[in-house]
Structures are given as structure tokens and as C-alpha cells.
Image (cartoon, rainbow, N blue to C red; front, side):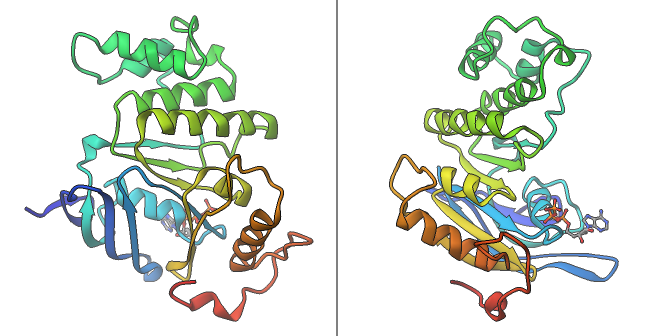
Length: 264
Ligand SMILES: Nc1ncnc2c1ncn2[C@@H]1O[C@H](COP(=O)(O)OP(=O)(O)OP(=O)(O)O)[C@@H](O)[C@H]1O
């Protein structure tokens, strides 16, 4: 039976599918930002989405989160209570302690215990009674991850979750997210500006351009995915080229003519 998630018409996914959206459209004041975008994620698949600033990445996430009532399109999508979202800022409730933030909305007699376990998994055992303001930015983002994953979502939507963190903390958070992903196995759609973050974490990287998915590349770089080796460099260069960035100088130039090719 078709229902609505924001402006999307969706049905529950069949086994093995987390998302399959077809013809996603969104315009602001008559200007098309998403123009018939198709995107699928298998259950448990980790997909990173790259795209220039303003290409519509957050708009895709808002549509999939079911909070954009003016988006159009149809497909299959997990029910909203099986979808978690993490943002660049942790968005914790400042008037609730850390444990209460993670346990918020959890039901069942074991809710507090599950929240404690999730906090321990993100390395914050012992900080349950702290107030959010007492935590660093990276620690707050770890609480945010714990809060999202303790619900065991089928789909995790992450909008540049590490964008505001320093490089060292970001690298640590990559390792943490990879560990949590192994443990909880949601499908993940990670929006990022960082090509190395995308390659480090994802099974597949898609590039958003011209309102559609302009490239869709499997990450076949052997683990651990250190930024070295010929396969890594080749994939990185292809993605940067798709983004219109010169691989040597990493400066933005004109987009290649192939930008409108539907698939790589
Ligand atoms: N509520 C809104 N009203 C008007 N325009 C909007 C609104 N939300 C997004 N836009 C426009 O849609 C386009 C895509 O925005 P979006 O935030 O999805 O891009 P993005 O790829 O996530 O960008 P960034 O990488 O800079 O975060 C932008 O041109 C933006 O100005």
C-alpha cells in the first residue's frame, strides 16, 4: 500500500532493499534542484554522496527523511520509524543529560541499558550523567551517533556528520562509524564533501550533478583503505574529475562535458 513520506509516494521495501527512489524532483521558486533523480540502496549498503556545494545533496536527504512535503517522486523506502538522521551539528537536547539524550523515545524495559551500551560503544562510558554542553564537539557527535544507531535503523541518513570536526577527530570518527556500521548494519547514505571520507567508508560513491546522479562508482579498493596505491588514486581522480576538480591542484575548474552523462 502506498503511503507518503513528506512529498514522496512510497511503499514498504521488499527484502534486501533499503531505498529505491525514482523521479525525485524538487524546485525552489521555479528553479529545479532535483530533476528526476533515481537512487537505490540495498539493505545494509553504505553509499556516499558527493556533489558540489548547492548541488542538492541535503535536499535529497530531507526528501528521503520524509520531512520535505514539496518534494515529488515515488519508490520504496523504510518507514520513518526505521530511519535515523545525523547532521553536522549533534542537535542534542541541552536540558537532558547524555544518557537521557540517547534513550530519548526508546521503548521497552531495557531502554536505559541499551542506551548505556550504545554510549560505551562510542567510547563514552562514564559520561552518562554529563550535560551536552560539557562535551567537546567530537564527543557530542559521538552521542548523536549512539542516539541514531541504538534504534537499530534500517536506514541511516548522515548529512556531513564530521564536517565541523578537526582532521584528527574526523579520522577517529571514520574508524568509529566503520565499527558501528559493522555492528548495526543499517543501509547508510552519507553526504560528504570529502572524497577520501567517501572512499574510506562507502561500498559505492555517487556524484550528484545537474539534479541527477551523474556518476555511480563501486569502491573496489582493498581494505584497509589507506589513501595510497594505484586503485585508490585512480578512483579518487575519477571522482574529482566528476566534481570538476583538478586532481593535482584540487582547485575547482569547469565541469567536464560528460557531466550530464546519466551513468559512468
Ligand atoms: N528552503 C529553501 N529555499 C530556497 N532554496 C533552497 C532551500 N533549500 C535549498 N535551497 C537551494 O537548493 C540548492 C541545493 O541546496 P542543498 O542544501 O541541497 O545543497 P547541498 O548540495 O547540500 O549544498 P552544500 O554542499 O553547500 O551543503 C541550493 O541552491 C539552495 O540554495
